[in-house]
Image (cartoon, rainbow, N blue to C red; front, side):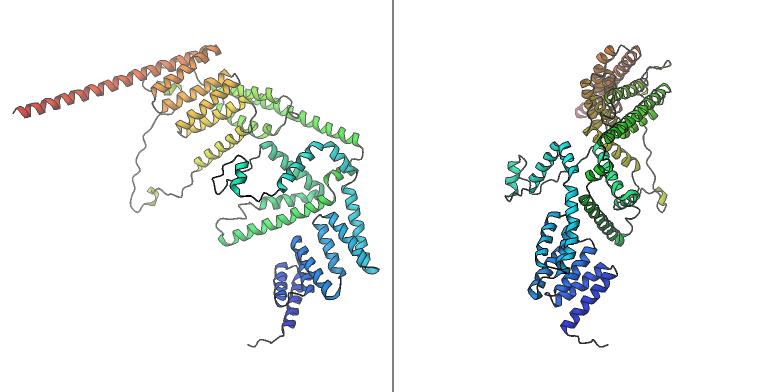
Length: 558
């Protein structure tokens, strides 16, 4: 096999032609590859740079395209004078980068250089740029600034603060900010958004894309969700996973860049201004929409309250607790006071109804008799069962304990705790915090995490005192009693029950008073039983020690 001995100039032109061929076929990576090879042979070829700039622009790499176009323009000016096509390419790329003022300056500069037919392309482009600047800075922008003046000033201050670059050492910057200046690697603070802010951003995303793309906005939403879709990014596919993830992210960034171009040329405030020229009609439509949402929210509140009361009446405690967490942690947490005018009253009603339903399960049965596990029976605690040791049979894999078995219950528990803690971070009402801490403590108790249960129950007790809710105070105290009873800590359970006596006296509920008194009696009996057992063990040990000492004395005498 023989290699044709092309000259360097001919080989460079061949690579350039191949790059143009692949660029027309929309194979931009291959085209860029051959343009790079052509430039390696002759780096002063402005035609190759111009072609690579066009390829970068087609592939939505506008910054790289602008750099190549400027370099090609300087080379062309030195070689044969200003080139109209390259200069027009620079103007187009500045326009696509949303730099309208720079585009206008560049166009006017080129109109001073080119005359006649060559200037017509710049004049047409100048008409487009002037119309865009007129639309962006017209009456619609004036109304927007007047309406959101304080917000715009705040955004401008944040933008200017971010633009300031401090070249001092890291420890000096941290020292001036009052932060730790010893850590070499600063901790990156995670941005935690409230559920209301997440809902606002989601709504803004939908509104913007529906405005500019109509029904095609579903495709953009699909591309956004595709970046983290586990059905596409399979863990089993080691080679294709990273490539598909990179491809989906790059393509979505191209779409986002395209949407920014549309929004810059025709901002959302301009679209609304042209869509609703009659401002009184626009305000009337907004008011009607607000009233419609308020009415719908009010109907949901009435329906949910009716269902919650029905569940309490039917004593479906588990279903009631799940339903309250579903509606209060999902739907109503995203409602503002403007839409949900009676939010505080509704929140109080829901959580107090749940507390009453939880307290109704604490009562002394008619056929109750105090025995060894009477307190656990009263508190509805499960009986402690000793686990049987599994017998492993050699060769029988069904008896082996596999380490790859997923802990489904543990994952559900951690997810629930994270969800409740995130709600606490953005909760405004003390009664809601009291409920959330109570749920966290109850979840820890179900997983046999007794110390965490007591810790969160005390937090719930503190929040219930802030909102002056006696029923939630009693429920928090009973959680502490449950945790201590499960650990057989009789003294601490008695101390917790003593905290409950003044609460039930203020509640003036005979059923709960009788329940707490009975729990205290059962705990006292358990305490006396424990003392008797300890004294019996001590007497037996003392008898054994005396017998052993007597035996040693007899042996010494003999």
